[in-house]
Image (tube, rainbow, N blue to C red; front, side, top):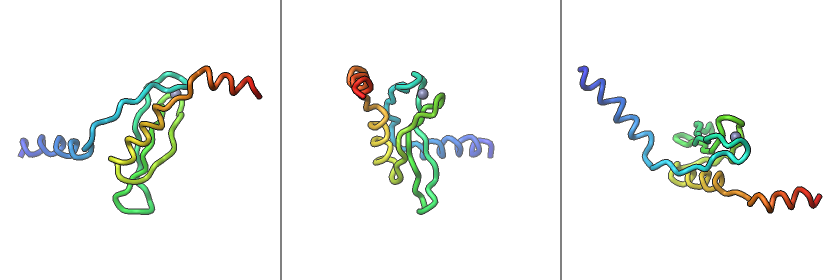
Amino acid sequence: MQQADLIAPATQAAAAVPQAQPQLLRCPCCGSAPALRNSKAQFAEDTYWHWVECSACGLATRYMAGAAERCIPAVATAWNTRTPASKSAAKDTAQ
Ligand SMILES: [Zn+2]
C-alpha cells in the first residue's frame, strides 16, 4: 500500500513531461529566468495553450494552442530570437 502510494506520483510526473525542455535565454528586458507555461484551452478537449513568460516582468511570447511537441519548440524559438541591440537602437533613433 505504501509502496504503491510512493510510485504513483512519480509515474504521473514522468507522463506529464514527455519531451525534453528546450533551452530558454534570459529575459531581454530584465534578465530574469523565463518559464514555459501552459493553460487548458476551452475550445477543445485535451488541448493546451503554450507560451514562454518571464516570471519577473511578465514579458511573454504569443500563445500557441495544440500539441506540446509542436508548440513548445515554436514558442521557445520565438522567445530565443532576438533583434541585435545595434539594429533596434538604430530603429529607435531614426524616428
Ligand atoms: Zn523579464
